[in-house]
Length: 509
Image 1 (cartoon, rainbow, N blue to C red):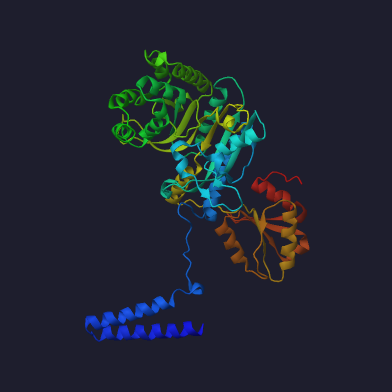
Image 2: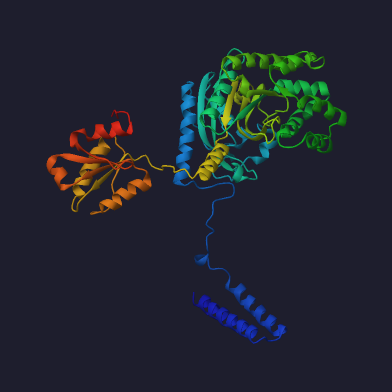
């Protein structure tokens, strides 16, 4: 330490010498010479670990959430969970990391975005990329052939984040899946119904759900002349059509992926089409596509799907879109993606899609990849893109300056005079024991005005005021913060009166 102290003193003195020479406007060579000496001394000094400054920031692609933001997120989660439960789903959870081999080879080109963990205990591990592959592993491991489940948890992607658009490296997914052998398109239709119910209930704007089928895509690629080994990579290119032009997609297919230009043009004739059940009928009559067994199976299922969607009352929200490809390798049948629509600038223009907020599809082969005997469990599911939804809701609240309550406190226990802390503590304890959400200020003798102001700032609707006279009369003065009206309530009736005023159901212990 003594040596370091002497070095620090030398650095200080040399620094003063350099500053003095600069002030005296000494010649440049002399200044440079003294600066070099200063740098040499600083290099000898090195860095003092104890004095290192921490950079206070969250890692790239992650964020903290304030109480206000969390209040918004909880409301969104509640709406989603309520819908999942209404449709009979059970809830599961899986580890945040999996064996690397569990995740490898399931995501196509997106596999490069998997976070690998440094070996800490003899196993090669990776952070989960989504909730679907862990679910398939869970089914195979527990030999389950039938379950309807939801799972809400964080997933991780080593992506380039665009946080203003709700794109992160750590984010939540809200998944709903139906596993089991059922008649065609009934579970698939329910998944689309759930997607529409959730997006409608969140009131984030008009949306459209694009639907396609991997079998139609594969059949289309086959008749267009795409080599078998290029199906998935060409699929990945087609999936970019919602973000870039057909010309850009064609250039990628031909220039980067080696597809013949005439094959790309043939694909373009198909993938630029979208519509309703009439387009399905038209493609069923297509002379080339109708010769492909896979494509025909897919088209007939999509036609059946539209019948069920009509019965569910959501067919007007669905578009059969041949450009929808969904990049993940594990999809085997129907695929879908919900996009928010931007109101057209000019009358007569088509609404523009401004971002995906939900997606999913059928993946009948994924569980079989994990089963030792290769037993397949048909599965279909959906995932709600909650981070994008949170961004939209937060932006809307910022614009409206709407106040968001960050607590659910129903009543503040207050006192009108001094030396009533014990009485406040007794009353707040009674309310807590009865299941009432209550608070008090942590001061022995708070001013009544300060207690009332706290309620206004926190959005607490009621104040239970204790005073010397109230104690004698065995009553509590209950005050409405909004109207400032006060009423005396018998102490034994206080719990019921607070419940009645805040509409909280009876707490059954």
